[in-house]
Picture (cartoon, rainbow, N blue to C red):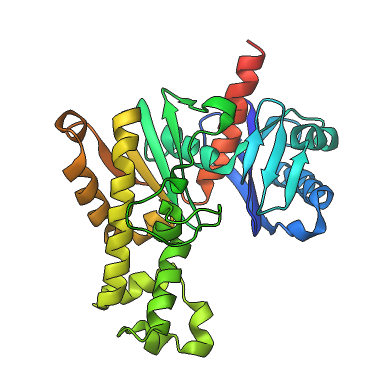
Length: 323
């Protein structure tokens, strides 16, 4: 049996795990990314984490390869991190550099694709042929898995559903446009809206929990708590975000025709608070033939999704390259 290393690189932390051929995580560790130290430092840390997690599992000489999921634009075929704002990377030859440090084949891809691939094949979408995954967190992105294979599109750019314009929305988005889905329906977008309403003096329990000097501590999890406490503002914000997500998914379903849509990230943690308005809105706008054959599930693998997806995608690509 072969074993694979999966590495999920975020702006804050790196999670590295060892995965068997069944997609099971045998051991993992997490360390701060410290991207401000530069790409060489991060690469050295990934190499060290690979050695450490393999040694802890007693499998140092049985590692077949490494898969990495990183944020931003990636050229998975030549192993280059084209641009990552979270890491401040531009044209980093990630596969070649990590392979040089570990003497193992290295395959890279976008972190959302790896998360969705893990969930689609080994998590909430297991056994389903056509899976659309949507991550709702600091940003919003998606990926499509068709019969165990990712859809990339031209220039590997498929999946940026978060930057579709939403009618009636005007909030500025980090991409430079206004009114994007991500600007209003992401976890950070919902928090921004809550802060704006609080500063405008709108009645909410959140203003008691977070006076002006503590307002920066407000999180999306606090919106869920306030909604559970019956707060009308938190409910309004969460419902609006769910409705926007539902509207955005309608054309995605009509174009891609998934059997299952998996909601991950903070959106999964919000649960029915976000999913109820999302499902109601989406289903009310889908053509009957689509509505009757699509369902929504929440992600099940948690932090392991990116590790499993990265490791198993590396295994798939390695086998294709050597078949």
